[in-house]
Amino acid sequence: MEKFFDYFDSRNRDSILKKPAVDAGPVITISRQTGCDARQVAENIVDSLNRRANTTKWRWVDKDIIYDIAKELNTNSERVESFYKGIELSNMSEMIMAFSGGYVSDMRVKKAIRDVVLSMSREGHIVLVGRGGVSIAHDIPDSLHIRLIAPFYWRVANVMKKKEMDVETAEEYIVDTDEKRHNLITTFLEKKSLNIDYLFDITINRQSFDIIETADMIVSMYEKKIGKQVAERKKVNK
Image: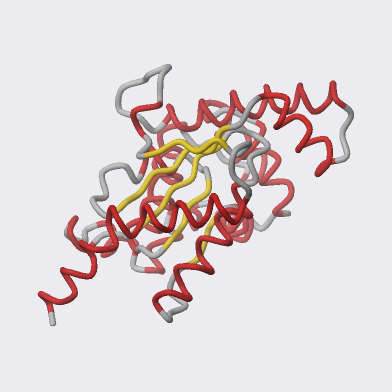
């Protein structure tokens, strides 16, 4: 179990976390209501940013974190994912106990998750989907924080189609998942708040824009907010 908490030591976690703030990032976080196709949006953002900069640096992260945890816990990734999505942080220590046979405090679990997400964010060139990223990466200067929303029954129809659910099951799934995602965001805030709107640079209604249009807008906003300042620093440092 100790290996899990030391995981990013093997990837220079400490050096990444100690980087000057000006050298951290860039990172784009995407928080979303359930049924807004955030992963597909993230994939298109990464493709666009890499093409524009003629690079392969940009990547998007969602389940990668779960795979890393599963590897270190020597367990099935689907099993970890079901726990990660389905329980609140206060119960995570019980999940890890079941896997490892030893007690782990909630504070250690919280710190481990924060360090994993923050290390990835500070290393930069990452689009982070969910995982409390907007709270954890909010103090990184070169960051853009996006919120995807849509009307409830637009999302119900989308979930029904993609997950082959009936309407009642889709409604319950959306309400339950939205609540858990909100709780994960507030878990990593220094001060708890029911209203998290202030965390985001912009909110996009997915009903109004398709996946490609949404990704293009986010890339444009990235270039306006932090792309120029990153480019300017590169010129200065040459």
